[in-house]
Length: 276
Image (cartoon, rainbow, N blue to C red; front, side, top):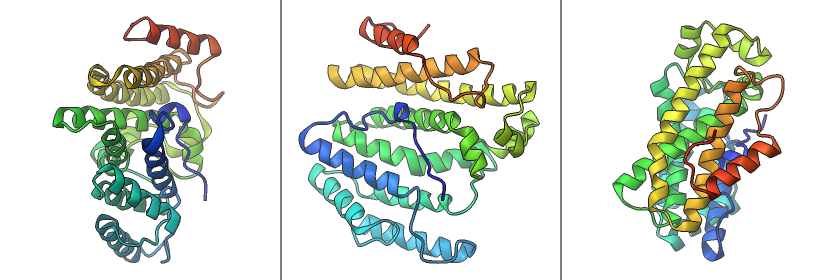
């Protein structure tokens, strides 16, 4: 099965922890990552059996009971992390629920359905990490949710050609139809006005999420604010780079040159809020 890679630049607070929180973060990331290739002991083409299996696994995760969908070492460490740090274990269950999406081809008919997946997959994981940082208020959770959405969608945009070739499409079908772009074009990278219009719409969605979540930086400690600001501004710089290259994701991987990375670093250090 093809791997589902989240680019490191879209994993804020992946390894920026110390002490007991570092061990907890490692366990939470291992759980999240393992669910990308879930162990499913029923035929993948039996939709009813798959649904029944994941319904049961979510219930077991929320109750802290043994799982089959990931290895024992993975679920044990995640449960222990939640217990030690006072985190909500139902957030693990939500990710288990979302993991059924990874069984077979991935399509989302509408933006609303994609958002439902993101709110079961990326948002619960982000809330667990936010819990490690002591972010508990409803306003902070809303900002965390939006940042999770923005970083997730940018990560999937960055790996869109590979995902499409693996029959995993994280752009709503209604957007493809609106722009007049086929899945085959996503795989091959046919460059046309239609493709640019499609990807421009995705960048608008990502920018909106990042903008809504950006206020979280003002309530974090200096160190954590600095880390998040670096990822946040790096994400905006990647979107700018994508627009600069006319939304071409196929000729070369979307990344920043060493000079642009230096610019982002200097912008973070000297307080600018948007990359030039």
